[in-house]
Length: 409
Ligand SMILES: Cc1ncc(COP(=O)(O)O)c(C=O)c1O
Image 1: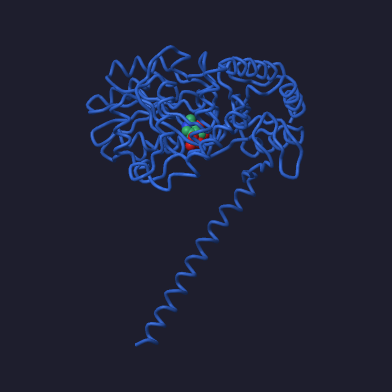
Image 2: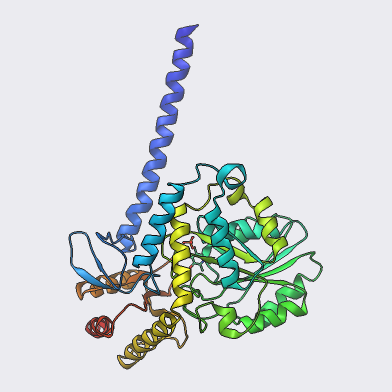
């Protein structure tokens, strides 16, 4: 019987190889199409730390206008020292998920500081804010519940809503349109739990959510409000506590990243009332089935939050830099939205054009990213400038000079 078995094996292997090579060829075709359309993205590779300028491998030192290092803490000596100290004490990692054997005291220390920062009872951490958002929504919203989301919310919120039970209502309102939000809340009237989830700062537009409007509408319908303040923490509000501080309102849940202004490494969190955080610890799958934040990351984040508390003037300085660049771009004839965020998008329409303009900026000594479909809707491709508190006037003037040089393109 052995030879027959071998014939079967042979035929199945051939069919498998044929199908496999067809699939790989098909994928190769998709990648070739991106190259042909001029929309294939390449990654800048840096040979040193993140800062107001960066050194490209094999290239020059350039002005950095595309990092979320809003407060310049990604390579701050205190933050690096905090990370090293935590690593010396706890080693490299937990080698386990949290509830089995993976919670270090530094995790609890960080979560206490995050809760205080967000003005909530408790907080819990994840290896990224992407994870935190995907942990949060499906754990809170089950069958018979409703989640209502702004159409321009970050991809992690969109995917988090998609992960909810099929028996939950998933409603989307037009960007910052309070009438459309009211329509969704009406539609969700019969739901057991209702949650409105919004970005605090919309990462591709650089605008703020209408938090007062959202809170008012949600209260009237007995709905909870969650805000992802990943691009607002350290940036918006007098002391950098984000959009609730900026507007003087209270929300029920805050999610955020510690991979941007708050240390720049990685990691995310959910901050809320105790029962919600306990629910996350008991139920959320990215915490139940995935390792905790590495201790070095927790130590760096603790140092970053301490720096922000000690030196709130970093936020004011960032806001001055943002105003300076926005003003300069406006004088050059660029249309830039008025907003207190550190994200300045310049819409150019076509994806290939955005990528070409980013290349032209690099030739002029400035690293800036061009974004196109599928990151932003088709036809709204853009250059996105991001400002840091550690940019000097000289850096910003050089950047404006480059914007002047590419303007006519
Ligand atoms: C609004 C928002 N939420 C979540 C994330 C994801 O953050 P992290 O890098 O911590 O996963 C980002 C990152 O781009 C973001 O802009």
